Image 1 (tube, one colour):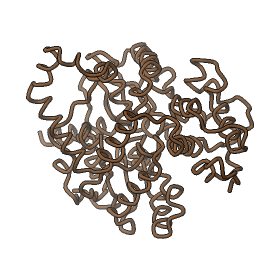
Image 2 (cartoon, rainbow, N blue to C red; image 1 turned 90 degrees about the vertical axis):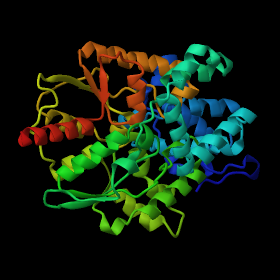
Image 3 (spheres, one colour; image 1 turned 180 degrees about the vertical axis):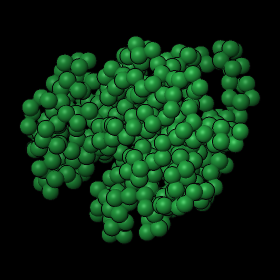
Image 4 (cartoon, rainbow, N blue to C red; image 1 turned 45 degrees about the horizontal axis):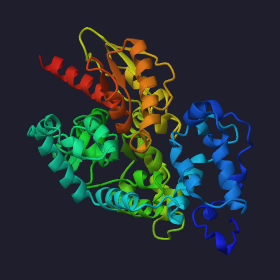
Length: 442
């Protein structure tokens, strides 16, 4: 453990193994992969620059300041640097602990910021019933037409500018949430091969419950019995990525309590950002004597849906998603390719679908600018990355963009025109399975 002087009051950075901080060789391989460094060409805006700042704080050469806090939140957390790093630096652990230290020290404190963090991290995304209630209210607001009336009335001019600019990109809430579309236990019509747990998420549950249904249908088609516990709530990735590791631990324990791991061959997620966090409960709860062992078992069983389907040898569908064929391109969600090392599996699924013409996307692994809440906290940089991503998509001539993360999905959807659809690869697979059944019944 790192030894620190009393006057530093370090908590989270001090919790790190010092060898992790020392691991960076300052070789610079990460520099061209980092969106913020590419934008500014400033060393402090690069992964190695941020690590150098962390080490200086640990060594007592610098203090945790407002400037350090702002730098940690200027980082997208896209993890492209981890893919490029030849030394295998555990940047996600450094990044999350640095943000947690920033919050512990209170260097970015303001009454407004404290209120919004309390409302979102400690209320909405910590209490499933509250998030669902707000989701129902937002659905009613959108479905009733009041949303359009408010926009036309000019009332939006009364709210703060940053919220006013974000309002048009508010995601559409679905009429039915996951628990209304998915039974708690579902058995495959074909011979059962596996039993898996299904993670429904929080935002995913309200905005893309249909993707959760598609995930279950694809699992059933491949001989997996599916258990979907009720009212799962947030996995804690949002909390961990935003410096609230204490609440992230609480969310992890709640989720662990909902699944009977001994009965499951895998726990499946379809959201890249969540999956990257879900696979590290062991590190998050390593000091908890009651949950450490279960967390390690959990880590060994969590799978992204594409990862799991390829692992078990999924059945290739016979039904075309479009009778005339469809040109599709694939955007790699940062926390799937960089965070989990999953890149070819989604492509394998897409290529298996009859009628899909998969066209590679230029700079497919570059961040789209969503990065959790980055498009809210850093709209200028997020907007630039979004425009670059959309330009590359348009250059392919594709009519469909496949991506496996809700944040990326919404960010790209808000940037492309109505002629380009954004879909999850597993939704396209499920659609092909359904068409195959319809054609078989005719």
